[in-house]
Amino acid sequence: MALEFFVRKPDSGLGNIRSSPADPYRNIDWVLMFTQGLLTVIGCFVVYSASWTRIDDDPYAFVTRQVVFAIAASVGMVIVMSLDYQFFKERAALLYSITIALLMLLLVMAFVMPSQSEISFDLGPLNFQPAELAKFTTLIALAAYLADERSDEVSYPRFLGGLILVGTPATLIILQPDLGSASVIISIAMGVLLVAGAKPRYIALISFLSVMTVAGAFVGGFVNEYQKERFRVFFGQNTDENSIYQVRNAIRALGTGGVFGKGWLEGQLTNDGSVPVMWADFPFAAVGEQFGLAGCAVLLFLFMVMLARIWRIATLSKDLLGTYLCAGVFTMLLWQVFQNVGMTLGIMPVTGLPMPFISYGGSSLLSYFAMMGIVQSVHMRRMR
Image 1: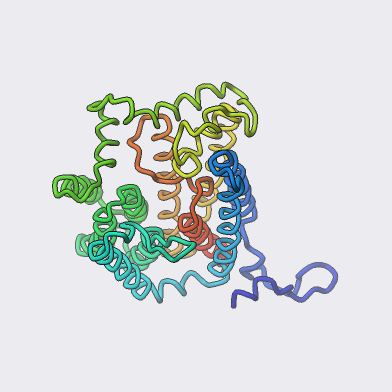
Image 2: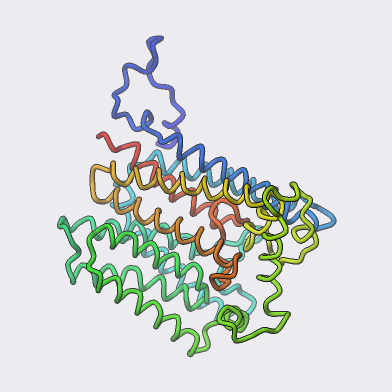
């Protein structure tokens, strides 16, 4: 039960000596928990600083929603932590099937009802993105599938099965089109397969098929015009001022911050709307302008700490399932941070992929916290 997380264990006055050292609730990784919490708090400050001048009637509109999302995500993480990660393995097929059904339903609704968003369900005050759920459920399904084969390397039949598991949601997400989220699904698969012992040619095959799928989406007209424009800008095929001003201003914001920045809420480019949707797509630029190189370094250091803790937990896991789950979360986090920082610096195409824990967004925040809950569940049960 999730509520057991809050129940104090028997105490004789010398601490919880009656509980076993293997008790899951005595084995929470508090360094990882603190780092995650600190990043989330920093994210709320960044969201506020990048959005407070955009809505005259309510400067707290975005940050208020972000705080609510963070609270809801924390509750979800506690529930995931309280459950043995084997619980998710036993229900991997069900969770995966629900995700595929939602992704297919979204495509059908977007085709039948033009007013329906192509990437999310409109639930009144909230928008639910099945692609964020797909990150969580695809990881569980792939890790559970590969963990059943106890060998030093992934056999070819097992690889093909894993390719189908990953390729189905990735293709459906590309058709939305949401190339950023699809790339995250692929990065998760890469991490799990590499740790599972997949041969280099298998990884090369996944990379080739991913590129061909994206190319097919472009040729087939499934990719929006603004997404094509982003790639043209990245490859230098379009120098129109209106097409490149967003990235150019993001780079300017980073550069004008200097070493220590201009101070919180003092960034001119952050405040005047020079970078549209900065609180979601380019929060790193807001950090750079307000807190300078030092602030960016601190932010990246916190992500490095988080990655190091996840890697440590992967090595401590007592079974392959736990190791694979942590490997998937590790590569997901690494890829998303690299992609978001890269597109802010202009070295990666703009995909709209958010920065974990920092960017505004409820679905993404719930997904990150659920992933961290899975990692904590592996750590809490490493001594059983």
